[in-house]
Amino acid sequence: MQFKTIEYNKETNEIVILDQTRLPAEEVYMTLKTVDDVYHAIKNMNVRGAPLIGVTAAYGVVLAAASGDRADIIDAADYIKSARPTAVNLAWAIERMKKKIDTAKELFKELLHEAQAIEEEDQHACQKMGEFGAALITHNAKIMVHCNAGALATCGIGTALSILYTARERGKKFTVYSCETRPLLQGARLTSWELTANGIETYTICDNMAASYMAEMNLVLVGADRIARNGDTANKIGTRGLAIIARYYTVPFYVAAPISTFDFDITSGNEIPIEIRCDDEVRTFNEKKIVADKAKICNPAFDVTPAELITGIITEKGIMKPPYEKNIRTLIGDVK
Ligand code: MRU
Image (cartoon, rainbow, N blue to C red):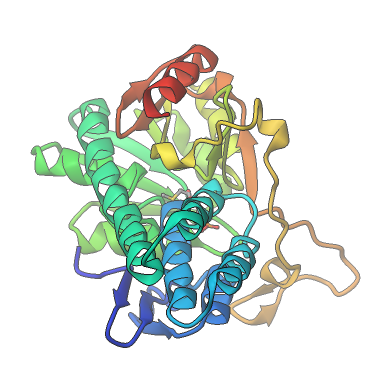
């Protein structure tokens, strides 16, 4: 990758992130100096994607640890955790850091070490998902993707897109169809940017073109923000629609996600909190108003794809197939 999504600088106690709101027009880096900066960067999606949000939050706790006592650091951690509700990686990373706050003898040093461990584990998970998933890419395949589950969403080579990078390294030829992903256009702005920068042939399609192209596809590959114990999966709004269309055309539909994206505390997707974002994201386009003032707006950032529509879930431990309830129970046993 020719970019780094996040870097913590111990000398200055600052976090530098690639500002994803400015891509693809400008590759601009942004410095986060305070806990407030971290909260707003996550909330405003300067930094985004479930695994990357988790790593950013962990370093946010490190920022707080440089000056605060234990109670201050816990308050800061809880504040950062409240920035976005759906991606469980955020809560997971914060809870992991809070456990350290409770037990650490050398607070700053141990919290920094924990944040670095979360970052390294993410890189490793991306690598492994790529290796397991690459076997799914057939020669000359056409693959539909949604939102951005790539290197930009992680500290490594991505979740869903790691599979494409690894397959390409293994000499496979394929073409990607990337849904633009309204309203914030992560597919159009981010996925097309990182795939083409890495030499992968990519068509960007409007979301409402997916059904027209689905019959030609060999595979749909998406990421995840939270996976319940029965395999129901929250991901960027529009994912469920793709899964339904894929089932109609009998196209395999795979989710790629690290184990940190599983929420072992919830039994089904009904319990996943769905983030509702501000009206303006839908009401305006390129800062121009595109919706009549009197019209009301719906803007859920995520939807839940029922487990029964998911062909398999690619994790750093391998490809999980149904029955998810039973196989996720086994996974819980393996990781606890
Ligand atoms: O709102 P975003 O851009 O943070 O949503 C991101 C997604 O939905 C991704 O598909 C998901 O986080 C997986 S990223 C590896």
